[in-house]
Every structure is written in C-alpha cells, then in structure tokens.
Image (spheres, rainbow, N blue to C red):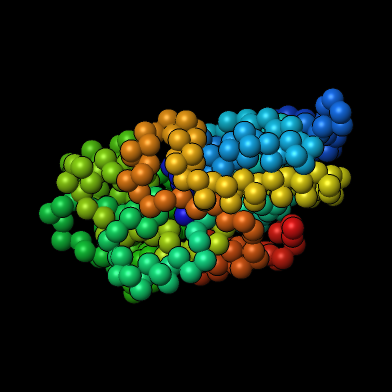
Length: 338
C-alpha cells in the first residue's frame, strides 16, 4: 500500500496459524448464494484501510451490481484474520498485502491474487528518486528517530533497537530491505515488537533508537519532534500492486464468471477512486476513522488496475534475499489473469 493504509493493521501480532480458524469448509464457500433475479451474493473480507475506500465507492457507484454481484463487506482487523476467514469459508474474497500472501502460500495455504487492492503508480520509485524526494512523504510507512539522534540513515540502525508492530512481517521486511539497500546489515538490528501507540513514548524515553510507523502515527510522531530517515515501502515495492484481493483456487475454479466480474468491478472502482480523490479520501475517512486532514498529510493513495506477476516477484525476491522465505513459490499460477 503504496502499501497505503494497509500497513496500519497489517503488522498486528496475529500468527499465520490463525489460518486454521474454525468455520465452514471451503467446499461450502464454493456454493455462492443466489439472490433475486439471479444476483450472486458475495462476501468480501476487508480491512479498515484506504484500500477499502475504492471497494466501497465501487459498491456505491453500482459497478458490482452491473456485474450481477451483491457485495457484503465484512470488516476484519488484519490480513492473517482475513486469510483465516477466507480459508474457513466466512468470506469469498479477502484483502492481504503481497508479503503475507507469499508467506501463507509457502506454508501450503491455497491463495491466488484476483485483483489489485492498492499499490504504487508505474515508475513511482524512479520519479521519487529523480525528484530528490528522499525526505518527503512517499508512502504511509516511515522509519523515525528522535530529532536530536545521530542516526541519519537506515544503515546507521546496525546495533540499534528498532521497534516494529510485529516481528518478521511486512514493516520489518521493508525496513530490513532499506537497510540492505544502503549497505547495512539488517541482521545486526535489535528488533522489538511494540504497538503503534507505544512506539512514540518508547522513542521519546530512549527505550528504542528508531520506530517503524504508519499513518497517522507518522504525523503524530513528527509533531512530537521525531524525524523521518526513510520511507521503506516505496524503496521495496517501487511500483505496481502491493495490496491484493485474494481467493482460493477451489472458489475461483467453481465460479469463473463471478471472479471475472469481481475483477472488472474492482479495477473500475480503482480507476474511479484515482480520478476522484476527494470522494476517495472521504470514504477512506469513514473506513479508517481517521480525519481527512490527517490522511491528506501523507502521499495520495493509489489503486492499480491490474496485478502483474512482476509485482509478486519484487516482493518475493526481497523476502528470499533477506531470509524471510527459503525460496519463492511458482508465481505465475498465483495470479488470476483478467
């Protein structure tokens, strides 16, 4: 997102073991309920993040109804819980960023990317670097240090204590990637897990040397004399889809027409959200419960119109290089082409 507001909940300390949650079997979930007039009823597990704003706009604008789909949005707190709901049959589609999806797939969880939920525009990274915007908001994730700290780059984090919301998840991985890109060794970082709310007091008290934060906590930290040394998301993902709408292979195989209609509606909604940011910010504020003014303080969100295998490849290569995956799974079968 950019990892967009997804990362605000992405890194909750819920293990992938939650994917064994109880619920209806996946075969039960394959049987889509039919509404009046042949409308197909679909449940989507969505997080309270800006990615969901485009989905909600698409529902309001009738894009899903045009495809014969009646969408019920089930709010879920984090991607592991969303994937658990998907595997348990409580939802038909679910939101997850690419890195948790790859971790789940490596553990034999049946997931495929159906549509893009959020991400970066084409050439976003190149334009950011060419513009010299090393310290301007580039995504909704950031590494911050105290104003008077001697730390000036992520490379300086070697041997330092760095707080992340949960270990070995997307924010830690993207910060580790930033450290490696600057010639540092992320294995020398002393990672600790703290809640987003606890990070700023820990930084101010000197308990930690740096914090990995997300919007709106980035803006809060900056208002309390913290400064940003890195925006790790854009440097890791660079462009393309990062947040994904996923489904199981069995559901996709049983409902090809429904899945194709969902893809078309999502990507039409994404295009509308990109072209109507005022409406998107208003809907994101409703979804996240964060004031529009705070949301606007960061870089504008972006909703891609497709998922490319290259999007997963960039994430997988980083995870393998840094040791978060032993090896990348075959990637082409994980993307349902539109």
